[in-house]
Structure formats: C-alpha cells, structure tokens
Length: 280
Image (cartoon, rainbow, N blue to C red):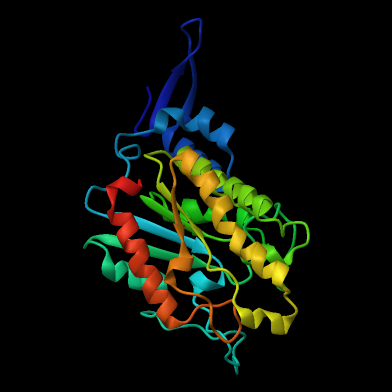
C-alpha cells in the first residue's frame, strides 16, 4: 500500500509499477527549474502545476521593472569617485525611485541598472574586469526569474553600444535590444502568467562634452538616430516607445550621464506614459 507522500504508478498492462516519492519528485522538479532544464521540468513536473502556481500576478501589487545601464543605476557625471569606483545618486534622486513615488499606491518599482551594459551585444561578446558579461542578453533570464511576475518592463539601453564599432549603427543597436527584450519575454512566458507591458526608452542623445573623450560629431549624430530606430521597432510589437530626450539635452560635465534634474523630469514623463491606457 502506498503510504503518505507516495504515488503508485500503474504500467500499461495494469500492473502496479514502481512507487515514486512525491516529495522527491517535487525536489527534482524544483532543481530542474533552478537549473534551467525546461524539458526535464516539463516532463517530470507537468503534473505538479497547481492553481496557486498558475494564478498569475496579485491583483493588489503592480511590479514595474526598470532595466538599463549607468543612467538607470544613477551614475553622477563629472565627479571623482574617491574611495569607490563610481559615484551614485542617492536613493531618492534616481529616476526609478522617483517613479515609484509618482505611481499609484501598491506599485513596486525595481531598479536594475548596470554601468557599462551593452544592449545589443551578442552573448559573451565582452566582459567587465571582474569577468561578468557586458551583454544585456546574458542578464535578462536571471533578471526576469528573480522578479517575476512583472506587469511593466521598462528598458533603456543603447548608449554604450555606440562605443562598439560593430554596433555603432542605430538600426543594428535597436535590432539587438529588441532581441534582448524578446529573450526576457520568453523567460517570463516560460514561468507563466500574463506578459508584461514593455516600454522601450531611447536614451538622451550624447551631449557636447563627449568631444573631450574623442567622440566626433558623427558619433553624436548616431546617438540622435536611436530614437527613430527604437520607435520603428517598438510600435509594431505593441510596445510603448518613449524618447528620453524630452527630459532635456545632456549638458552635463561628461555629456553621457544625467543630472538629478534629468532623473526627475524623466520619472515624470514615464509616470504619465505608464498611467495612460492609450499608450499601451
């Protein structure tokens, strides 16, 4: 007789087969999910789906995930970092945190900015000094899994891509960022529930101070071309498009990173877009 936690499996002949420990099967299924073994999970854990696990996001909490580079992280332009590698705006000055204060109660904004992240870079295409990948596509699976379920996904990438000769064309950058977003959406679909609404943000074009680090007028012009290319790709997919240039020209010390005023103005722009059903 099967005891507690034991499932009796019958073969095709009607004979009683092996007894499978349900608790052990649950553990195997959980490890398969954690390890990214989708086929194994589908075979061994298919029957383990419960109404609770497939119910989707809570009706009382709305999650907005902000994914980007140093301007999402909150890099302060033109300041020596001193004892640390970079200087970062405080918690309340960064645009994701300002956004949360502007949205309806019960909205949770998650900020995930990585300095130097490249939106269109192929998997493993370049690494940081510590060996971590610079390619945004290598981060999205873990990002989505860690924060699922997500209602709104805001993606602002492309500035660092301009420094890569193979990616400097705005159309190529936009194509690569779309691929990165689609990879994230696929990960969300694998976990289940309604897909998040996507907002693609074109970064503020580079400012004149970048000439001091060797960026010529052609490079600045390419940064201006990102908005058109992102808009062309976002609209047919039903994604929102937002041009961060509306937050003001980059007149900062390095021409790359935003002032605190840029962060606040952009948060206000984005809050209006997220609240407008017509922009879905």
